[in-house]
Image (cartoon, rainbow over all chains, first blue to last red; front, side, top):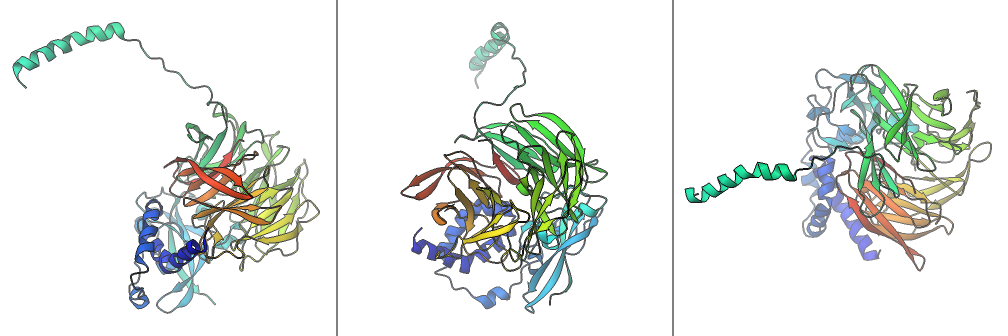
Length: 174
Length: 380
């Protein structure tokens, strides 16, 4: 592949990819991927023309139901807030997982790192319309089990069916 | 419609039943006894609620659906060397999403897509995305190795002859069980080591033999599932390094590290659930790669598939990908690649080599095949 193409990709990655992915996640990963080709073309065309105002971007915090919301930085699963629960509560009739994985996410308001416990909610089917997030900052394979997000964390519960995932801030990272 | 036009239609419709009765031959209901001949690709469509399914398709450009196989929830799979038998391990909750649980190993006949045998294994079986290192068959096909997680980790050694688990080997802080001999496996651990475990036919086992520290899980973590090439294990790191490990001795030993991305612009890095595949006949590694790699992008979909010549230690091809995050390659001399995307599309790639450069070309696609295509394998 030519250096020119590499430069194009690098430019897009740095300037646009984050925004594309964040926006797309609000609509679910599958619809994002189906439209990714078009989106990338659009980004390539638009980015060199439009100014990128970081202040304006920072002043518009993402909603909690957006996969780009800061507490969801290592969440692989359905948002409980779109499954009948909230950011920190399991939907009625489900049970919170007894064990969880942990992410370290940066709060854009104070630029500090926080520990986020990702608990699964258990014992019910998944909600088809729930927002599915697939972020993996700091995520590691099963040899670092406490950071691993490809496993069903309902595994230690009496009711083991995976329902959705909450993001609960449990402390500050060092 | 005028009445003069309607009358002939009424008359014609009255006459129809008599004509049809004379010509009618009843159809016969049958069940296909075998799938069509020819090489196959098997795609695990894993479910976390209810049954998983393994779709079996023709491996040619048509990717024709031949049928499926139906294990339980969070299924794992491994194919026998001759491609005739598929083994799965999966869980069954009595009330689908709650209630008492059973973990079942199934033995399936690929030619007829039918059940040959099933038996229970320990319920500690991990409920986890399908991966080759979590359910593996020893070289002589005597034992299956199944990953457990409660979340404490261990490995069930399953004696296929006896149809039961004969041992649960604790593997704290470690993950996967890669067969390393008739009665041993290698596992990768969060402290940066690899460990070898051995067992005996009576179910007894010895203490693990740990390597020196080989990698840093914070600075440059390794994907947990390696490929075996020329007898050695090849692990891929999040930052695009290859770690070559000899696990034939007492304890695993790192023999070499290689870098995929040296001199390549664009911050390329590997990404996906199964980002690495190896074709033994050509000695080529294939890697799903994305640009703009950074912490947390190690599962991002691929923009390119890279081909790396392991013997020459050289990147020999970069081909366009289609947002896949799971990759597999056939074993024969003319590699055929299959890759699946998160949106459930399966893409087939032909392999061509010219003047030392490898070109992978899209030659077949099955759109919307799966909900969660977690793992792909081929029988050729």
